[in-house]
Amino acid sequence: MPQLSQPLSLNLTDRTLALVTAGLVSAALAATLTAAPAQADSLADFDALTEAARGQSVFFHAWSGDPTINAYIEWAGDEIEARYGISVEHVRVTDTADVVGIVLAETAAGRDSGGSVDLVWINGENFITLKDAGLLYAPDGEGWADRLPNWEVVDVAGNPSLTTDFTVPVEGLQAPWGTVQFSFYHDAELTEAVPANPEGLLEWAEANPGRFTYPQPPNFLGSTFLKLLLAYTVEDRAALAEPLDDADADAALEPLFSYLDALHPHLWRSARTFPNNQAAMRQLFADGEVEIAFANNPAEASGAVARGEFPESTRSFVFEDGMIANSHFVAIPANANAPEAALVVANFLMSPLAQLRKQDPAVWGDFTVLDVAALDADTQMAFDALDLGDATLSPSELGPAISEPHTSWLDAIETRWAARYQGG
Image (cartoon, rainbow, N blue to C red; front, side, top):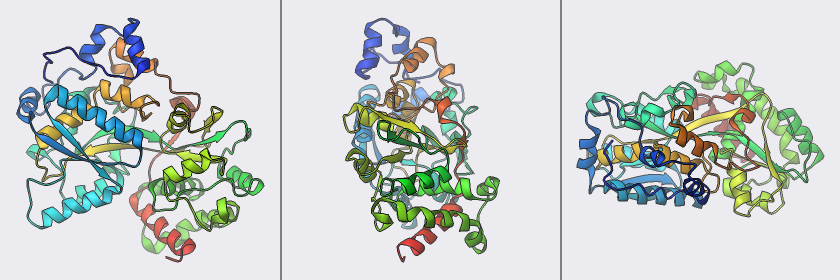
């Protein structure tokens, strides 16, 4: 990593700044938050690469459905420009599949360089599509993420989802940016006894008609809820790691759809309609129309409480035998216009500085990809001092992580869900 010629402006949240002011975060933290020690194989000479990228612009295509995330990306862009002279342009995206389509179309038209996408927030089937097509940046024919300086402190050993994305090996072709685990939230003043499994949720919905719903698939959060139910209803969870043959899909998914058939009559508006997305479901909870909701980000409820959107009595809970968990990444298309600058941006997004700010629920609340125990003592103290909020479960409270199924399972679920419940 390049040595900074000026003091770091931490520009963190008020809570972290208070730690610095109080002397609980030493000057050493300011020197280490943006980078782990450089490794010898970090794309040969990362200092030289960073200097060569100065003055370049990175068009970062990233989902824009949450204003807090947009604000975080803006902050990261400001920091990157100040430190490295690289401009980060947030291209706001509603569906990452559209970005994949751009890369595929440009490549088909012969635009093998100078593409319009330099960096993309991605995971799952969208990553797999680009990987299978050979359209991900691979300098010297190899992955790059595991050769960046900040990879040294990524929690590879403790989090398998950082190296395997929806059962597909990452092989360094994308850099981890955050990790999430599905969790429910509720108003503890209204709901004392919460469901411990899908059977309990069905019983609760029957006793509280109209007080629960889920976003309409293929919205990613609604589909993740269905994947969670799948993990509890499928005969053998181990089968979810393997491709699902379409000829076997009806039989394999019958327990899931039998459960949904029983649940739907008790949902909000009797399942005649569903919220369009995460924001719509969150608003239903804020307005008191539903009593239980959920998020991919375990800290979402605490963030909403901090912003005054949810009651202070909001708390989170999980099913006792595990919840769906995954990681999300940034990738560089093979035809990117500014791949060097994109590498610098990806490395910064993995830095302790960026990861610390991102994990604060008042900023975003997205859990870090770093092995906090591998960081210096002052940085560990800064992570430990983060107030995750009363509505956020700790990693130990989140319980077992259930891996994402092979994408063929989701394809089969979404197709059959539309046909069964929407006449599609």
